[in-house]
Image (cartoon, rainbow, N blue to C red; front, side, top):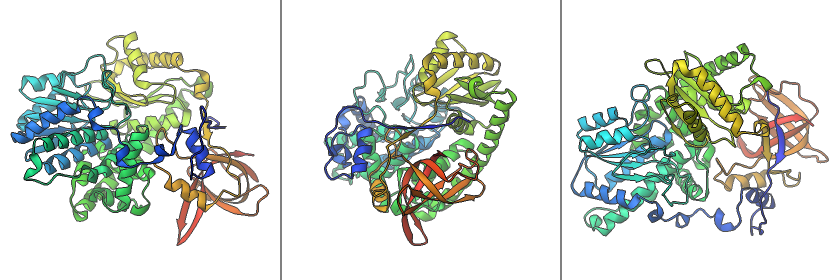
Length: 573
């Protein structure tokens, strides 16, 4: 097991004071590059103008023409939460704008794989679609778009994934990550891209006088979907994304959200009024993703489309069951992965820098989560493989800071052309397909590429800390300030602090979690602390003095409200 080191997260450059902001939070914001209070204001007026997204105007005109001529529109999505929210948003908004013939289709990952494949286009043609709109996919669907044109179908691609060397000849391409797209918010999720297209479509319909006989929809009413998809896809929360997420969270907390989101939060026992990005990322998102991983993402989409709580609750219960099954499969696969490493005596210095794992019993839908868990444990870029069709292996890759995983796969493909049958993704996650017989060759090449792109210090696990909180400031007031000061997430992480504490009391919960009472040196006040899933790395009994890295939470239990230290790392002081 790699031993982590706590190091300070330091701001770069000089910063002016942020008036009205708690001193500890000023330090936190400076370390995340915030230079003015304006960057902490998350009103809709601060969003980048939709007109700046290249391709959105052309897509809006094509969609407006389709609405005017009552053409059949088919939305083709991806089988994850970003894809599900993108599909739900598209259908709700297009129907509200007057589209009478709009439906969706999402490939089953086990039957058709990812994206707008020729086979999916054939299904679209059988449904008599006339215009296909991809959401959260399509930038790599060269053959699918070609087949659509052969069948006389128009295609609008909306995506955010990185393009390959060849891109499809779509009627319109909307992707902020295309090299010639000048939209500044490159980390916009798939649901954010289609949200922007819908904003431009509404403006186009308004110019055409379309809303003279029908109500004009308020697209902000669906920002709960945008927030969910953005957080669940773990895209960096740059300023534009933070606005979208914060606006969505406000709507959820106020009870103005989709019944399906409310039902999923209910199923997990979460308080709607205290909803946070962690609830979206670790509660709602995984339940929707579980449908796409194990069965069919349409269950998640239908839950998001449900118009009443009564209709949403049975679907949320099914998603909750899928998620429990997913966790069970994941635990079994983690044990198998650990045995694989032990059998090959792989640990410490012997561990490849780029780690590839395969087991013939692994589930295609769970290998991405497995790769993520192994990556977190060993701090290596990890690709987990499961059996695919006709002797193929399907791989899901997760990376660490410093390695752009899609670029690494691109280099492997260049070193041995034909080795990778298909691949795509972005900086931190990717997918690929290769022949079973090429697994060992690929593993060696991947490790070689990773070693070329990383330095030894990149593999040293660290906890980035926002410093020490003075004991006089450590309490409920600051915990509440932090809770109010989100949204926190990828690229804009929730604050982590560190310090040395006396262990007043210690208790092991369920043989996995540490429940502590701690006291800062020289102070009489004590604080509750909880360390989830830390017992395997730090078996007891704990020493009298510990050094903790922790997040500061507001804890409500049986009517009592207090500050709680949520431990992310502990070591002997």
